[in-house]
Image (cartoon, rainbow, N blue to C red; front, side, top):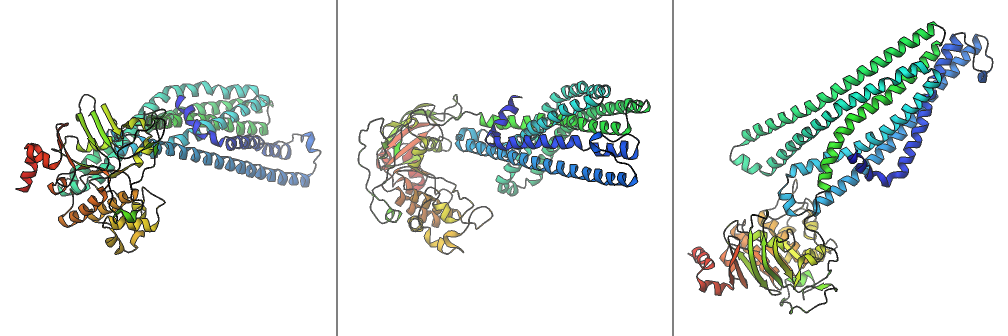
Length: 618
């Protein structure tokens, strides 16, 4: 019930339409009440000998009765047509409202997934998140249409039918109502079982989605190692498990519906037996029995709907719960109360064209600012006794201390798995430190507005990311309002303009999945162009040349160092040609900063940096 009430909150914006739905429900129920009466009048008063109701007046003779048959037949058609139109309109509006709520749920889930930290996404199966955001979200529409509209319609129709039937024949009404306790008993016995089996079935289906997603990502690995048969066998086993769990769920539902059918069958048989006896005793006319049986069908229809609502809501409630688990997950990285804004900072070079034509000087020293005023960023970065672990008991970074002056560049080196990329991730607050403080221009990053902070940082990853859209949109992703001239200028600065001009639609060429495929070097230059256009004072580079061939690396490195000019830069690097050109080298070993200084200083210390550089040069 808690999940149902919470789910219905997503439909409150459509309250006026919901009111119209229930108004149409009332009219439709009224039309339903009238539908059996023309047939009863034909049977009792036209075919039979019962006098016509006084409001019809006197009708004698075969011609008059033939005219009445035509009139009543037309009335039957009109009532069915009117009720059908009312019902169709009501259902259309209900579906429209249901889809509106579904859209709101999906939007909120997507927004949550966008805000959650990397820790959340690294600890959750992508396929399971996709299943929850797409298929489980349908549960909200089901809960609205079944748990509210169908339940409301059925309950109103049930109460109305009972009132009308009581006025017609109390004894037969009591027999019909006697089936309700049996119905509630069946719902209680099977309801919990259906919910539990529904949870297990949805988890099994979610695992199937996860395996599909994992196999698509790992397909080169799978095919190169000839593991297709193994993966197919593993997937087949999981689909068999999913089939078994779904079959178990549907089996409990079928048993439930069988019990409901038995209850309805007993009630109908009892009504027919009692009503027939009353007709034989002249206590009831055939027409009245037909009306009562028609009302009985209309009574059992909402009862049947209510019984199905129990099964459907039980299953949908499971899906809604899985969605609420996402929505209720606390945000690990978020704005604190009273965060400080950041004043938009620009390098001395203002336009993308000048990014590669002008000489960018380092920023001036940071000025002292009032804590209540927006921070004017110059680019000083400091790590003050920073430790971090994905699990608190297993630290990846331990007591890291260093400072970069505005415009200064630093290379982070060290063995694999020591936390180099993790260190970079702390600056845009993909994670927050477990201990210690990361500062920008002397201010704790957690005191700054998150969106403003990330606007000051350009990030280029080892694996270049392209969205399935045009090259122009990819380059201007961080500056959607960029002009064509700005996009082309950024591309020239990244040495990407020449190859873009050779493509079929040039900057309007669609790239990415299912479209034009670019080499790794070309994709990386597009990523650099994106960073040029963003024109942020802080630049983070995570091994941007590690996957490139020699020719591509030469072009990318030239663009990369042009981009670094005048920007405070942290670069995870492994090539000595890159490392030697930075202002400072930071050596990480086992999560600790063991060396820090200029390349020339570290060469003289004969430590890790000197060993690595001399080994590569030899």
